[in-house]
Length: 387
Ligand SMILES: *Cc1c(COP(=O)(O)O)cnc(C)c1O
Image 1 (cartoon, rainbow, N blue to C red):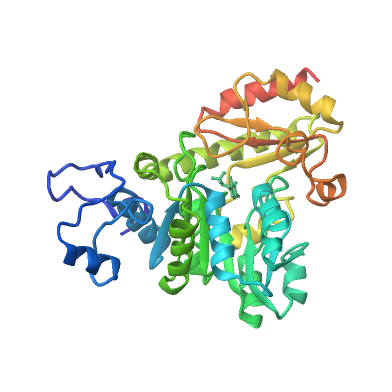
Image 2: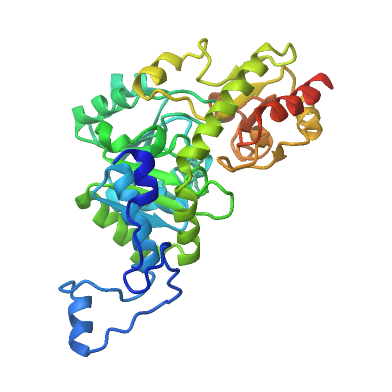
């Protein structure tokens, strides 16, 4: 099946009992097992069957089957948030004394987790400046490498082929946070990456109405992550959120096509506007990661950052003039969003780390929604002209 058909048909199918086309929302915390013998067999892992919704729920299981098929994974795990996915992967696969590697910048929540929480478990976190540095000197003691193919908010490109080559040399597990691209544009597992992670809050659900996380990969890696995320951390997603994620997922391809087309047009407009100092968008030919992304993935996402040549004052005047873009963090919603990372998502960083992450005071990040691009351009134009 092609990906667009899989989005509609995989993991779904009419409910066996009622014929309902959509997955029923099983609002049940516990499941009766009928006899003491069945209880013993289920708890002993000898018999399949639902026991308690922190461990498994039929609505969530249907979604997990669909995601596994979309990612080309043995198994997918859906959790209460993207951060539950990040923390479960690290806690399940790294132990005290191990080293883990990340390529900067990583998502702010991930960076804070690694620095403030994971390091307290005796796990050393090494940060690399880019994929080239990782390839040149990945420490042989590295157990796990986490990267984002498109970084936030500087929209740098990390080449998954270089990262896999470096990790293979030292026998490290590769983990790709693919939130910015989605499996419609890139399927890391089919490119030899070991684990894919998503914030399901963003493009996968697509409507800005839930918080969710997804992890997918080979069975032997997924089993400890599942146990840790669900049984131990207790980061189970509720069945209503799982239903909404499944519902949103079905239109992923339609939405992504609209996001991508809109972003390409908006970026072209921004490049030509004299008030915009720099446009960070890998779809532009002048972007340093353009050819790598064009050749390795073939799509550029729908996030655009711009520098306005000024400071917080200039950025805030621009943002406050926007009428169609909503000032909010997050991304991948139907509506276009705009934010000022230096004073919001990256405000907790010290000035040096912020500068290293490319988060200048005049940088504004845009998540391009699915509105008519002409209206988005008109809105940006009036805000830029007012500066
Ligand atoms: C939002 C985001 C996360 C965290 O996901 P939550 O659902 O907010 O917990 C992780 N990585 C990336 C790249 C994100 O954009």
